[in-house]
Length: 59
Image (cartoon, rainbow, N blue to C red; front, side, top):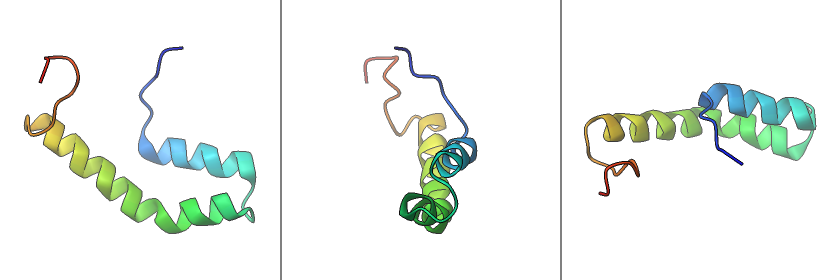
């Protein structure tokens, strides 16, 4: 199985659609979405700046 990159918001929306809006998982994801997307953007920025290893160059 190969992992396919997915935009964070799309992945979170897919999780919520699987469980339905009233499920505790969906409610938790909805509440945490700002924090999750902020963390994703910070990690993407760090990767772009070379601050984090991306697994492709041996760092």
